[in-house]
Length: 277
Image 1 (tube, rainbow, N blue to C red):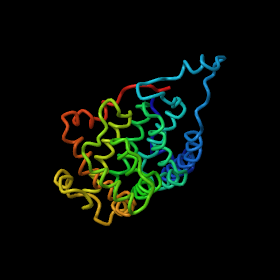
Image 2: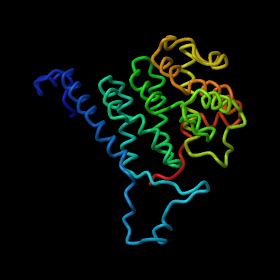
Image 3: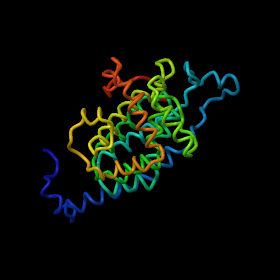
Image 4: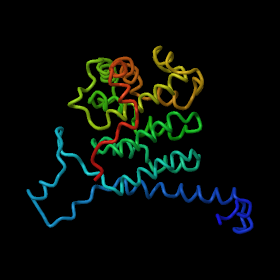
């Protein structure tokens, strides 16, 4: 019956299992540039003989405007990226960073506001990285520095994009981000709102573990985890939007936590809606 016993792998291949595993990981890491190219390609036009108003009539329309089509190829590439992130192998992480994929993931989540399966994959990868400890430092720094995770999360929940960096605009942005009333009302939220709350929770947990969070967050989080000099904490504190994030965490994010609907929002399996074109 079954397959080849594990002990016979070296006799059959002529190589040890460790060497085989290393070669497999190297092949998987080599996929990163190709995944980046596919995910960065503009959406292909609809294969249809229609044109003009007839073609426009096929566009997906929603209350907050037309929805960009993600495409099944991109969705499959995001799923593969998720699997690569979960390997937690340094060489794979390095390849993902070199291909600038963290920036691409967040960009897709922002552009495709109602592609909930894409949002699920992106939030899953972010949580895996943020909760992965110091061993995920390269991806953590890429999310914070290159992808602008702090601003992306604030924008997803408040709807307010980051201002141009300057001391004055930074102070104003921090003050505005701390206003609890700035949480987007239900009718104005994009599809990434719920997954963004999940990522915020993972980020706050990592920062609280390293001593860089509000007192409320430290009370809700165990003391185990990264040190105060963890790569995640250092990257976040050095980012120009750190003050904005702190104000946001103590204002709008705390407001979301206090809502009775938060328990439903934080359950990842509830994000099952929508359009996977």
